[in-house]
Image (cartoon, rainbow, N blue to C red; front, top):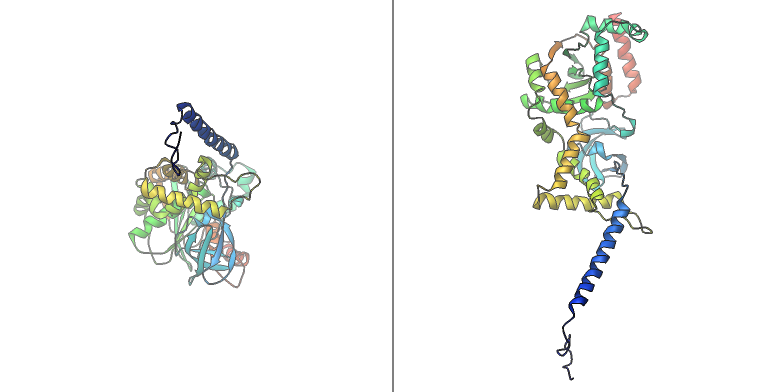
Length: 376
């Protein structure tokens, strides 16, 4: 039978059989299924880790790298110490932090996750109970002179109270708190208190933490009383204040990268091909994050990213528990004339973020000798 040219399928051709369509669909589904199975197999056992951000000057070269978990908490214009300089964050772009030299000398000292072993809240509570109890062990008897000096200048921590100290030094006005909740919780608590305190009166705050306490340093003159401190420790509006105080958007964006990798949204590198760099993964996941947040803000993966930031990085549950305990406790506020044995390590920790022609150990040793001479 004659058919016209350039017509496809030919007019005389019969329509495809239904069985042929089913076979084509089955073959396509099989190919897609094999691809998903391969991607799933390559993603099994994925272990995510914290990346490192390159620190670069806006007009200059690279200064080194800092862990992503530290820099992602900072906002533009925040200052931190790095490479022997005080730097001001300008912006975070992919896996690079662009900075400029800061005019002020104070700034946060970076912390690396591998060097942090924070004390748990349970252990901290037990330490507070031991310090408030009798000196019935060789270790406590060795600490007896320091504990007696602490009790004479200020007070010892009590199991049913929160010890707070307000003191003034050449660096500014200090508020020392001793919740004994561990370094991780104290970092979140210090940032939260600094945010709430700055709302009462414009001021610039720096903070230092260790396993048993925290220190807030105000550059402008300010006074703290027990009622104001109790209001700052109110557990209400905790999550809203954390959203305002922490760089939650950037933290969630980088946490979404790990979620997207495990969920299969970022295709894994195939065997025999070059591995995708962390910069490429962050660029791809950042694009997905922006699209979902703009067009589907209630997406489950976005909620999971924010929830994991609160739970793992900001330790919101532990922080809420500490706030409830401190808010209900008796606040024992003292105003010592000098640094105390408990506040001196916190003051020394804050001194790491200042520049001097002397090293940190020499300056701390000189102040320690001065305090020992004063108090005998």
